[in-house]
Image: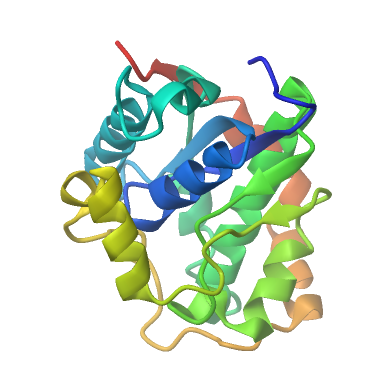
Length: 226
């Protein structure tokens, strides 16, 4: 992936509405991105991956909403299966922190990919307070799993503003529909993470670094344009 002015980020992309908008914003600002999708199969079906590919294909296409900027989205999507790893956080000690552990795993995987491709930053579609993992009390704990700065271009937007932007880009109808990332989540997730507890939970499962390494071994590459 050719970077522009040294600005290359790993974009964590889901099948939801937010992440394609974040990608579009950062690419418009001159960044290049390599996209990573953390697939929760076999806990969920392939729908999230399919929506992710369709949204990125729409943003990359010639004459699309980003113009020539669409070419700054790498043509290859990295897909890492995480369903089995996430199921390990459903025990009594860690289940309330499930969504924070999930995002920490995602960040760890993105950092490993960043090492491989030379990216300096991560990019997410996170917004303040829309879901439990995005409270101020949890975002900091999520960020501690990253050794790179995290770009969050949607952080100050409300959901309707993001939806409106997705409609303008043409990604909304691709991305709409139920998101299944909460398939294993608790009914009452924590909103203020205890970093020490998170790290103890992860160490009891072999450590976050080990989980990242094992998940990364199963990474596959999907052509966005194919």
